[in-house]
Length: 512
Image (cartoon, rainbow, N blue to C red):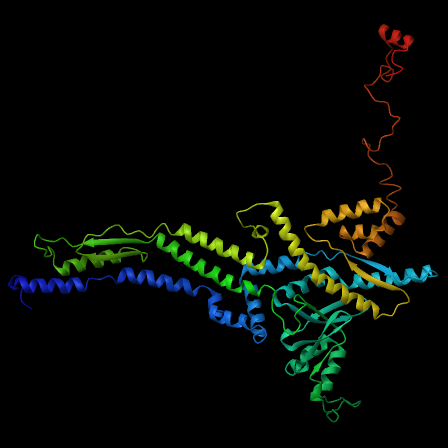
């Protein structure tokens, strides 16, 4: 290489151009691109489902029923907005109920009637309706359908969920949905048969066949099954469905919000990247030039100080080396708008679901009228599921073939209207309407609680005779004969003054 002084002006210019072309800008490019890639990988939603796949599934819900249901389960576990929405809808009904008789004959036997009434009271108490069905309702709101098998003993009642991927609604019986179960489900899960009861076990053996155990403990000859019995209707079943008007396939009721949830994740990633760029800094090192445009410093010296700068700053600071003037570079003024976009995307999730965002601690509008209308709409959807439970329980009661007819009636009480319902039943009871049991139910008591607490308080503890026999005095409980005014001298043990004696003689206070 010739010495710098031996280069011609043309060679110096060419060398300078080559150096400018290879000036190092990788530090800034690497910092930004790497951060964007890392942020993108943090979203589990995009790893599992993308928008193209989601749109494809939702466009044909009957064909992709299982995939949509799986997607709903995934979002329920990974999206707090979706989980709160499902739990909110499931928790609206309070599941308060009474047991009402009907079709009573005029010559009914009082003792027999009471015995059979108590049977139904104890049966529903054993079912533990509020706990069991609150779990079932949650499943319905993110899977649309709940298919279960119930088992009962003298003192317990439990409902076990069946995988809906192996279930098809086959009929409607007394207003209740009835499903058929694919017995091949147990081909690799025979260990579950014992938990589902003997009835289902016998149904599976009729389909798949079995090998009996002889009295001597040895295995007998295998009995063949019947492949035509693959789909069977278990007698001890319960089936609930949100979209009861569409029984050919199931689709989660909030499937329409799935794209909005992915949009929300999009905006969250953009906002996070924007926060990084808001703190991003850029150092520009300018190479001094002579009047003729040539560098005043050798490229080796420029590279040396460039590398020293890079080695002593953090990865969030970009460094460039340039012979040109640099205008201030700012990545700010984007974070506020990105946060607004995230809030708007979150609001879109609840708007698509038809619920007010104010119920979930968000929203910028606070109108009690709007909130009340929103909750009434949510109540109407939630009570539709309660009516199905009511039909199923009443069908169960009919199958008992009791000498008297009873039905379970669930009140339209919710977490929002409980106070109004209590006030309504209280005023109706004061007017002579036979609704004391409904009043007690609206307060959260089951029929069993009402009956047994009445016995405990009135007959056993006799609270009305002892602890609560004397009510506290108030303007409502005081007698009308009570004398008002300030205490008299006579009540204090003092004599009257001369003016007081004169008033008594003249009877001046008689009309006061």
